[in-house]
Length: 353
Image (tube, one colour):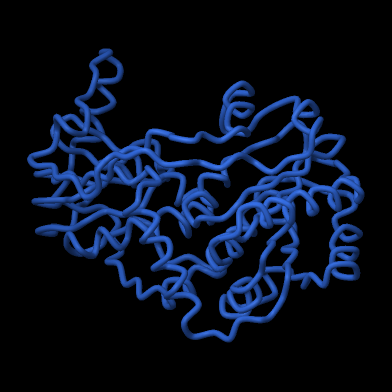
């Protein structure tokens, strides 16, 4: 079976034809969790640090500045499932009655696909989850729980290396891996909002990860950035890590050198997980208890609070220290790290979990 939908989609783009919204393309939709209002805490940051930021990553500079303040009653969206009929998935793109959804970067300029025929499935993967490990771990793995309730979880990504197989094992994830396929029915999800249902799934995930390890009695963990991922070079990373270890008893870890169990055991009782802002910190978010703090070290030209969406979901706090220099080479002042940790301690004393 061959799909012509990639071709007709490209023709539609050339003709300037629009595509229907997901709700209009779906045969059926149902709400898994309602919209709500939720208190979102502010970022823990020293006075004057925000003024150092010259560029925001993943958002605009005004929206980044707005996110620093939190919100006492932020509107939180619902979680919704959609059942699509007569679906082709070709080269990581979902096609259904004019609607398209990109699950990952395409590997071919044009592919008509030789389709495997599958009666039904439920997709849990996302483009960002297939691009960044942290989004896979803390976004897609939560949506997997919805997919297994709706049917057979399916993914277009082949088996991945690194820590992914261990996490899949610990979380009991057994998706059907597909290439190009035709589905009579496919369920997809709008699962982006940090509502009560998603927060509960985050704590369920933490429970699954920590139940078979012995947590270390440790105040903090520093997760080294390493050389993987988008380049962010903290020139004095080793010095900051050493002083956190010497002065505060932090454990220093290169995540690529440790198993998932070792990382979870180190972070499961930590009150602070620190490091250069990046995907390696997601190991800490997954394991750190509610009320803990993620302390991110960031360059001024690549500042972001994107991970705060994750710490909010895991009911943790988010702190940041903005350095001097550029992402390719920046430095963090040790005194500002100490002062930020004092802010964290004061916040914890004022708002005990």
